[in-house]
Length: 123
Image (tube, rainbow, N blue to C red; front, side, top):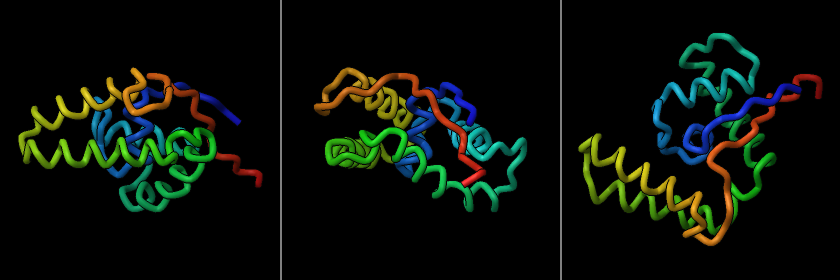
């Protein structure tokens, strides 16, 4: 099973339903492509693989699915709603939120970079 480091924003873009990584949807694609060992993914295949990758990420990093993380995601949703559709403001909200996550503001510790395992295709 291969392992590759990904920034927290990229990983959370897969698990939260919010694109919070600096490279937007490309982060989602890169994480899923790595985890699925797929050099190219059609949009349909990307969607089909996302839930399995999300489940695997939550298993690798249980903190991503804990109650405190759910509250943090709700905080992100509220903050994004407040700024409307202005992409620059959304980007600032996401960056600030990621900074709060990694500084322990939400009551748990998480690193800025996570070592992600590819999916086990033998099981």
